[in-house]
Length: 85
Image (tube, rainbow, N blue to C red; front, side, top):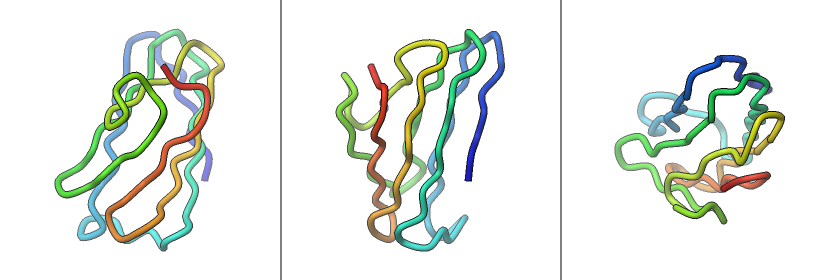
């Protein structure tokens, strides 16, 4: 799946718990920040995010045209990898 974020203002994408949206383990959601508004990721209830971002549980895309992949590795565990800050 590909999500393009084209807003001029900041946006937050919340990774939902498996009980709300049951993505299969191994699912990948790619996010590209096309607009100037910085994209942040947040944990839904019970969700764990691991990443290399400055705040590893709430990473942000670094700048316009940055991209990241959200990879589901377990029931409510996700890795976010890419051009993060």
